[in-house]
Image 1 (tube, one colour):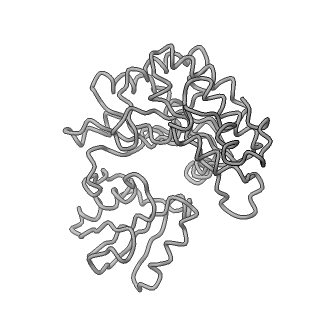
Image 2 (image 1 turned 180 degrees about the horizontal axis):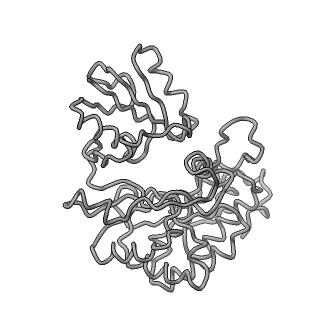
Image 3 (image 1 turned 45 degrees about the vertical axis):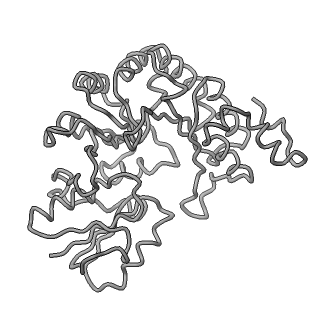
Length: 335
C-alpha cells in the first residue's frame, strides 16, 4: 500500500507523521512525505494529513477530491483526533525529515491554563481535566533507540514543571546532549528562590535553537501581570552564568487580553533587563473570539522587536517616530 503523509505546515519534524511512517513501514507499506498534491511522486491508497495551525485548515481541502481513505488531524484541524495506541507506541522515523535529532515528549500537559493556548483543550480531551500533567519518558529513554544521536528536540508543554526537571538537565549536561526546548520554558518556575536551582541546571545544558545552529533558550512573557516574576527569573538566569542578551529570548504574545501600551511595556521591560523578545501577534481562531485586540501598530512593533539590530540600536519610540513623525503620540511608547 502507498501511504501519503501530508505535512501541511509544520516548522519542525512532525512527530505524529514520523510515528505513522514507522508503523506503516513495519507493515511493509511505502510512505511518502509531501506538503501538497503537486509534489507527490506516487498514487496513494491512503492519506494522513496533519495541520498544526488553525489558519491553514483550509489547505487540507485540496485532497478532498481523491476517492480514497483520508485521515485528518493536528492541533490546527481537530484537537479530538489522536493516534491509535499501536501507532503512538512506535519510535519516530526520524530519517523521514533528514534530521540528526530525536523529536518527542518527556512530559505532557501544563500547570497553566492560558486561554489562548490549545494545550488545556488537549488535556481535557486526553485526561478529562485542565492542568493535568503526565510523564511520557525520560530523555535517556527517548535517545536509547538512537545510540548515535546526541540531540533531542523536546515538545514538552512545560518542561520545568516536571518534578525531575533538574535531574533531566543534569543528565543531559553529563552526557553532552544538545537540547532544543521547542515550546519555551516557564520563567515563573525560575523566579522564586528555589528556581535558582533550575537556572543553575539549565546553565550547564547545551541548549540550542530549533535548527541546532545556535545557542538559544526561549521563555514566555505573555502578560504584564507577571512582570515581577520575569525580572526575578532573569536575575536568577544571570546569576547562573547564562548570557541573557545573546542566548535568551522571550516569546511575547501581543494583541491578546492586553492593551497596546502593555504590549510595548513588556518589550521595553525586557530591553531594560538586557534580553530580547520574539514578538508574536495573536491570530484569532474565529471571528467571535473577544480577547483578541489587534492594533494598527502591532505589525510595526513586531518588525522593530524581532529585528535585533533595530531592537538594540534604537527604541520603539525612535523607530515609530522616524516612520510617522507627525502621526503618533510618542509618550505611549516610552519606557
